[in-house]
Length: 379
Image (cartoon, rainbow, N blue to C red; front, side, top):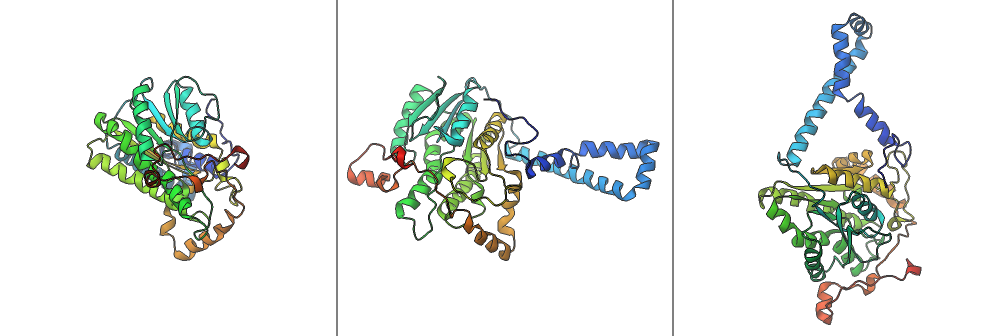
């Protein structure tokens, strides 16, 4: 399963490849500097710069912008890694991923496994593909701290302490605020947000102890922009983003583990069964992403060994500024988003009404995992 290396992404000609081309040319200080030097030290270049003074001035401006961008990127990279370096031995690293039985998570598992990396999958559904021997599957309800603790003990015994944690599992109910039941809302937050805490409590201490490893939080662009019928989902993803930001700060200031890397993924609408029926009216600027595209971005960031933020598609980076826009624009955009989930019929694998929280299990005396799968015919 080789990574896609074409000039055009799987999604075709969109704003992203055009943006990358501009960054590599007009905003590339090495290229604009070469042009400036030719204009300064060659006769032909000097003549052209005199004849096209305005164009030459714009190239000079692009050079300064490119230099400023390069300095900013360098500073950001240094700060993200706490100005520390670290090495990863992928023959020894152990990756743990939630929701890795299929979808984006499944693609991540395939990409890592084919590189010989040990991968531990936590999911409530069976693996949807044939996995090699270096993939270890554990059925686990990650919303249950007690169940997770038991499974974590098995993982340490069978495989070892994970060094890379990918909080990937996610759910969406697609209901309006007044239509969503208590269990709908609690289940959404339990999977999309609270599970990150339970996973961290189980596996982060080992990373802190060795001052080595990585925690990847798969959030969403919805963390920045909320639309009707996605309020609980967007709220849970915004909370996941805050979890990432707070974890990053605590690793440096509270746990003395500056080499433990943190990554957040903010992906746009991705073509998975979870979001069937999702309406996308901006296919050039915000194209529908293929699961493989998101998975490759995650894996590339993991293999880099550096902290960071991955935003897909690239144009979505502007949405990180959304809450600073004028209210007339913010409110208007959210209102136009009413079409996004009108025909949504995403696949559900859990019967939420039969799902139990840890508290309910304690009250009923049930200690086993609470997961109740939806029959395949109903998914």
